[in-house]
Length: 456
Image 1 (tube, rainbow, N blue to C red):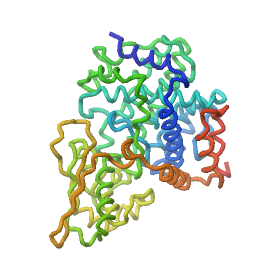
Image 2 (cartoon, rainbow, N blue to C red):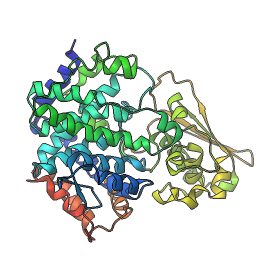
Image 3 (cartoon, helix red, strand yellow):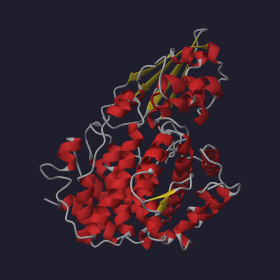
């Protein structure tokens, strides 16, 4: 019963750059640039220093670069660090239907692997990224269960392995082995999400590193298990519970899942963004002052409450706060935005924000879909008895309401300015030009140069 993994493997093997739709190419470039940006911004995230210092001792090898920092490490370790940085600020793109942050694991692994080998053609990277997204999100979308494990890591590892395997030009049987060896390393629980800890990003970092190791082993001839998705102890029975693959197969190869990926306009859990979007729209439309607001109610699917309905805490980490709608909703209501620098020690304990946050609650609506992130409704009740309500069927940043190019590039530039080290003054312009023309770029290692600090 290896049909499921064979189907995904055949898709990866049969696809070249020429098979990608123009829309898929544009979307892959967009989220490639976005992921480079959030990877740099994440170098200043909590516990990033501990991660880098510790990982520097994990084996020799000047193979690939820690983006935004410039130090070179062995490829799996570089992939791990870059993936940790990419997710640490909760600013990385997401496929909402699959509940997967695909590019964090996929691009981190693919770029490190490509750099180790001296670089690849830009069109080969674009193809590998798009295929990796197809694999990871196909697995995520097939699930009919609520989250039991942390899917961005457990499904992301398969997408990263597919992408690296494509760059490595594995044979079909080698790719089957690599995916099996990736499954042998697949892990990631929701406990770190519940506690709001940095190990959440670490799980995706482990997945990125494991993808390279899986491909290296398969290339060396090490066999892996094959019935890894629907076997008696396969991914779906163990990690998901219930699943349905036929709707996924019906679109595989025709609908590129990268075109369904959503931008994150705010550095907080995606599950907070519908409510933030609604608050900001009502704040602007009615010129609302925080002092005029008595109560804010977010009516949302059960998954939203599970992910970000957690209570405000007097003392909380930045990781916890990014996943607390009460806190980020108060930031939006007070400041008209949610920014990277809102999650400093001083910002996390701001008395005015905490007072506002206590007026906000998340209420579960009647949506029966356990994986739904939308639609959502925001209701703001005023002290004078008035009330404003807005439905948010599609959240800002989604394919239905995408960021404009100007908004996308503004986010990217802000991310580059938020890293732990100073990059060249022209880094943003150079990277935008390189990624815009990635399909004609001869060597992807050119992407690395502007991402090295001026003092590195």
